[in-house]
Length: 328
Image (cartoon, rainbow, N blue to C red; front, side, top):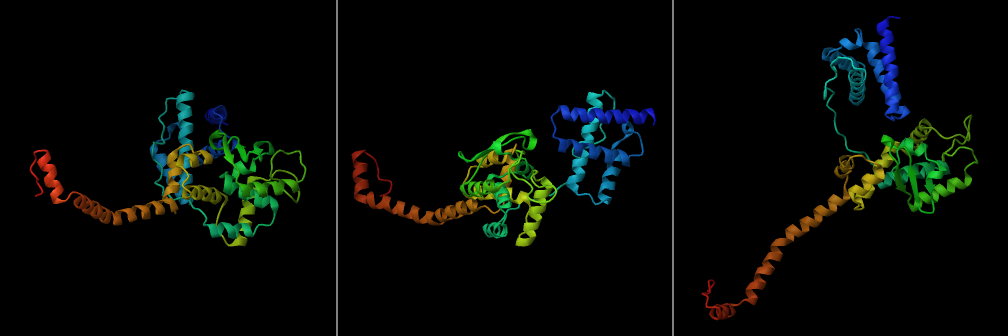
């Protein structure tokens, strides 16, 4: 192995340590390392000699591999981060070949949600108490898939009907509330849940891993099973979108929804206002009723003024104040 390869390997190891010091999650670090490995294996020249031309060729290569545009942009972002590390942290005099905003333009799809009939249809197919509670918590509390899998008994306060989400997206904690129907199905599951040394609430109920916490992959498989069985096209994240849309339609303030979902930016939450928005519909027709009835109100107001201030009364007021009746 050459000295150059040794230096590159050492730099990648140091970059991994750098990401850990920045408190990135293990999942995020794995994604970063995979992106850098993918780039270096494709590269046929030393890392420090790469220019924007090579980056453009790499984008074309990923497109030929039919990689999704969002995934391509994520890969470019991580490679750019690696070059920033080499320049600012390692002190190498190299220019970052991954230019800002060199990624692919992406569509901005609106969040997909379930109609009430589809929600009912989906839950009617679920018979297991664990799965009812699991997906109801996602729907009513707005939890992400990984947050649901990591939910522990200590984090749930059924008496106060709230739970704590620890180390959510961006390593942030937040409070979520438990609705009456979610509390009911969760209590039903906890009563029949097998005793286990594991603190996580949702456990595997059969097979080799019985009694151990259910994984993210396991929850995904259960969702796929029930989606196919019910005939409702959805994913776990659709339940979270549905919760946000339903709350918005119930006239909930956007800042409240942002807090409950754990969004860093209000602009993320505002996207829900562009989907089926019952509140916007109500506001629109309320405004239209006022607008279309306004001429009538104005006519009544004008005639009322004329009826009160008759010609005789106007002349009397004018005489009293030494004024000329301009309307005479």
